[in-house]
Length: 299
Image (spheres, rainbow, N blue to C red):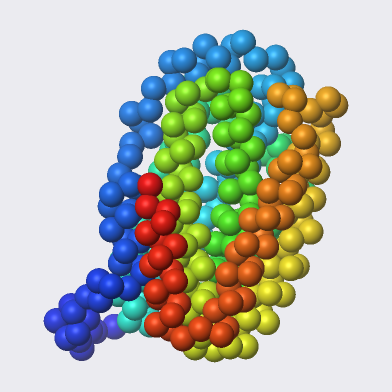
């Protein structure tokens, strides 16, 4: 397909848009190398953990790395749809998604091989609810964009990816993971990497909220699709916590399942409320609010 015009030579880049601000933050905070993280102390700490503690951390890491691989595999249709719409600023920012998700795979692989000396096959750790969301709902929604680029399909894909997989599952997992490591003063390299991952994911989620808000401003009925999609997946997200923690009795590291269930529910509701508000806002108001949130989270 030939190009008749280029955004950069016809209208110029709109640097005041939220995606361009996120692109600036990705260039500032996203350039970190998993290969440079020092896991020396992490390996020593790992050897002091008992079998149940090691198994729990392996289980969570296995969910993380498979999830990061899943979005790395299936993200291109979303980027293609935005590119085909001529939204260059959004496409430019989305190029960092693929880079960062692939880098997260690299990071967790280093941890699993160098710190845990884990076996190659960790597929048995995938619980049923995780499989439903990450191995079925996520690729189905994203790959549906190959043949359907409608606002409804785009809203569904972003709701699954940005709001549920990243905004609920990943954020709750990072919170649980970091809480355990920080409370017990272990795995400093892993803590460093998780802190960097959280910054990456916060930008992804901010874009997802922006995208869904923009879609609902342009096509208000998309709200019904987004709300239905998120509510359909919520029980699986909460059940996943049960399926992970119910394996252990007692739960390693003296954590409580309720603490993380409440956190997951809070993250889910916070994002749903933000998106719901967009139905009553203009695109100018959405841009202003998104830029304010981005500025407040600039770590």
